[in-house]
Image (cartoon, rainbow, N blue to C red):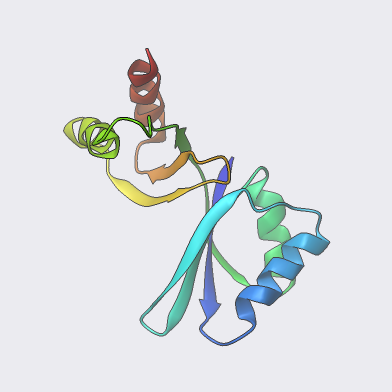
Length: 127
């Protein structure tokens, strides 16, 4: 799975067009979100094939700023503080979280600065 970061003009209909472009390319959005900062829209969406999404979006004139593999983790929703404990484990290992959102399967999606170490820690957490 890949996080695709997209810089958007902050104007009505731009997100709709972006969604139509990936839809026409046969690509499903598996999760993500967007926000407005500094006069730009910043979107992060999860795709099975982020490079296919990048090609479709760039062909339509969108600016893709990054395509990165992600760490996906299922939180124990019945255990208060689970997010804090998991993020603390990453922090204590010196792993910085660049982007966080959830996917359509209610899992935590993290773009981190050290994916390999993050995956090792996530595997240890699950045991």
